[in-house]
Every structure is written in structure tokens, then in C-alpha cells.
Image 1: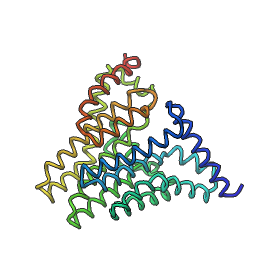
Image 2 (image 1 turned 135 degrees about the vertical axis):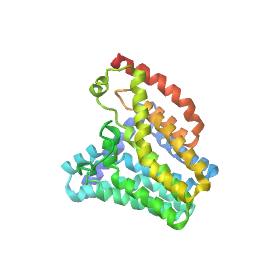
Image 3 (image 1 turned 60 degrees about the vertical axis):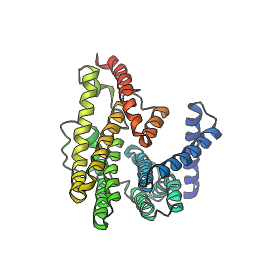
Image 4 (image 1 turned 180 degrees about the vertical axis):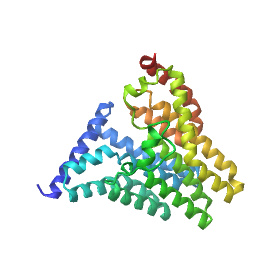
Length: 311
């Protein structure tokens, strides 16, 4: 088979898997595609109506989508199965295709800086995806409480450097919005650390009540995320003291949202979160007050799931 035939076969298979997933959640394929397009358009209308930071938040969402396609196990599998030229084409297409809707919207509103940053990140991710940062023995302060931040930090080290580069650009140009957006990106990055549930054995080892286990996980997430976010937050307050309350609000909302992700990880444990739960969390990004209702709800559900393992 030629390289083009291999690419066509691979993406036809991905399309089939996507459509099978749509039917598994009880929707016709056409309805799934229509719902996704409608949700994207409606989300953008709400986003640009609500805040002037919409282009940067849209870039954030595009970056999160990209990170979801950067699963190390999948990348290693693709490298082992496909020749190097085909692997690179697959990675480039898998990184550019999901960002295309975001890039089109950013181009439409003439937000060229977020557009260039998102496109650049997509290309960077495509061409560095085979270089597992986690293989580099990076020293971290997270070793006492593995595993989410220990593994996540090493896998997103390059991304975090880019985020702090964005903060530096904001400071140099006097654009406080870029700096605030960089702080949001730090918290958004930590959310990606909680997408994969650990093996039941590692939960059972805690030998504690479900409530105590969840509180430990939430406290650990707060402490470790603040280790990453504190430098950015303090620098912003130092350069823009008048914006201290916005920085504080971003930190508080980021911790609340992170708490929801930590608890949401165990809603269907040992399975991953369902699509419906992920959608609810996504809506919470645009409606932060919803998170304060989700926290107790997720907590109760997670406790019930974990009691069977920890009791």
C-alpha cells in the first residue's frame, strides 16, 4: 500500500470508531454530527457575548482538544505500526484537523495572535509528539503524592514552558489579558492530568474511608496546582496590582474546577467519565456558578462508587 492509501485507511477507521461511539450513546450518526456543530456554534456565540477574553479562551479550548490527541500510549503504538513518514503525516493531520474550526473562528474575528499561537502549538505538538518528555528524569516536587502531577508535569513540560512564554509576552507588551490567560492555561493543563483513572489496586492500597480518600486527592490537587500557578499569579499581581482580584478569582475558580475534575474521575470508577458528565463539566467552564452545584453532587456519587472498593 502507498502512503496515501495507508492514511486513507487509518482515517476511515477513525471515522468508523467515532460513528460507532455516537451510536453507542443512543444518537443517530447524522444527529451526532449536527449536535456537535450546533454546540460549537452556540458555544462560540455565548463565549464572544460574555467576555472580551473570548479569543484567548477559544485558543485554550483548542489547546485542550490538542492535548487530548497527545496520548503517549497511542503515539507509541502509531510509531511502532506505521513507517516514520506516514506516522508524521498522521500526527500532523490529527493535530491540525481538530484545531481547524477554532482557527477559522479566530480568523473570522481577526484574532491573529491567538490564531498563530494555536496553529504553532498544533505543529509543535505534531513534530515533537514522539519525544516523550516523561522519559527525561526531570526533578519535580510531586514525588511524595504520585501519580497524576508527577506523570502529567513531565508529559506537559514543553507546554508549560510555552505557557510561561505567553506570560512573558504579555508582560513585555503590557497586555494583561495575555498574562491572565496564561494563568488560566496553567490550571487548564492540570485538568488534563485527571483524565485517566488509576488501577483499582492503587485505590485499594489507601485502605481508608471513601470520604478521606477523596479529600486527600482534592487537597493534593490543590497543593500541586498552586505550586505550578503561584509563580504566574504572583508575577501578575506584582506587575498589575490593580488586577489582584481578577487573579484571585481565576485561582479560586481554577481550584473549584479542578476539584470537580478530581471528583469526576471517580464518578464511574474504574471506567472513565461518560460523555454526558464531560459535557456538564464543559458547560461549567462558561457558567462557573454551576460548579458549586456540581461539587457536592460529584462528591456524593464518587463516595458511593469508592465505598465498594475502600470499605
